[in-house]
Image 1 (cartoon, rainbow, N blue to C red):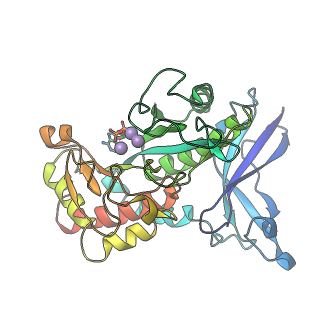
Image 2: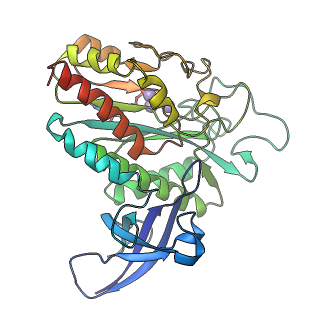
Length: 340
Ligand code: ADP
Ligand code: MN
Ligand code: MN
Ligand code: MN
């Protein structure tokens, strides 16, 4: 059997890493996907004189673009001695997820993004602006909706790849959309979100449209793009005391700043206190409160169990980083409080 394996990895671009991929033709029926290599000097992952870096397959999915037996292969980047490259944030998540595995953490991440056609968001007229925000969120009709054919194709591609997408919706600004991944374990949700992002760019390519995770693609009175991160542990899914402890833990000591600093480049430009955000430098949580840093959904208060929503992460956040920080902060606090 001969098939195409699209090896996908996360590069070393700062402050926000980019996705890269290249194709390996695989012949023969070996069960294991082989390790491979690339030129790290072209991806900000090496200097020119010793530029070989290693791609280690960690997850694979049916390739919905090429179909057939072809695969999408998500990789970790290693140095040639087999240790994780400094750009490899998945390695650190592996350790933390393992340490707190008994708490059975689950995440659902809401990925917002914006389509661009040339230099303008899709739906923005050449020069000037569309009608102010108000009717676009979950809207319908050609005067309000821009890019639905791309969104539908992306959704189909994600489902065909076996990704756990839980929904999609049009967002507050024209050309802005959201899909949700999860609930899944920390490694699964982060792996699948990176692959769903790759599929977003790749699907939009066919329509001559680009997608961006820029947290504030249009300055002024236009919503930014976030990646609300919904989180629960087994205890939180059973006991409201654990919900409150998790929300409290995220606000304790130096945690608010440690999290904010790692929630995506340009987070201050989005978390202004306007447009359904809390100011980046003031931690708060509340029931049903979309103006708080962390929201406890109303249903969770009614049921006295469930999950919390961290509304601070930017659209461009690294899901390996946000899930690691939340598990580390909340699972350790729940353990300390005897709530596990
Ligand atoms: P909203 O737009 O109202 O903030 P969404 O419906 O877009 O909410 O997203 C809610 C997310 O919460 C979904 O991704 C879902 O998978 C996730 N979720 C639901 N239950 C849990 C849970 N127990 N633990 C973690 N995530 C959860
Ligand atoms: Mn949502
Ligand atoms: Mn949203
Ligand atoms: Mn949300």
